[in-house]
Length: 100
Image (cartoon, helix red, strand yellow):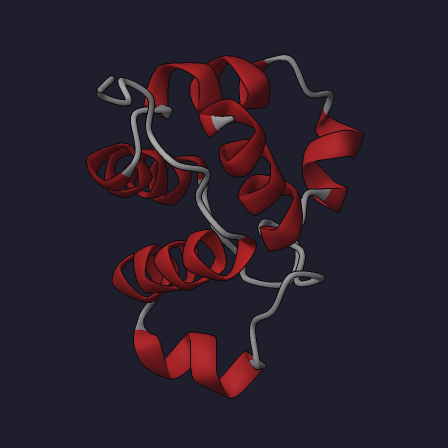
């Protein structure tokens, strides 16, 4: 009998819920609810997240999933234009793929 040594795949719903919880801690639950934040919400232009807020978001996500260093690298490789278009769904997709 073998023991699985890998983590099971994390569902899209689980990652989305965790990311929304993290966003609520960063920008406030009222803001997330008022704006109806979803996968298409632009992180910087619609939520108004600053670089300091993004650092906090990465810390919170890293506390839930072992992806903080890769997430930092992924974000650092993006152009300013790409960061302006970055959505909540983009971050959730990155987390899911990083965990795969």
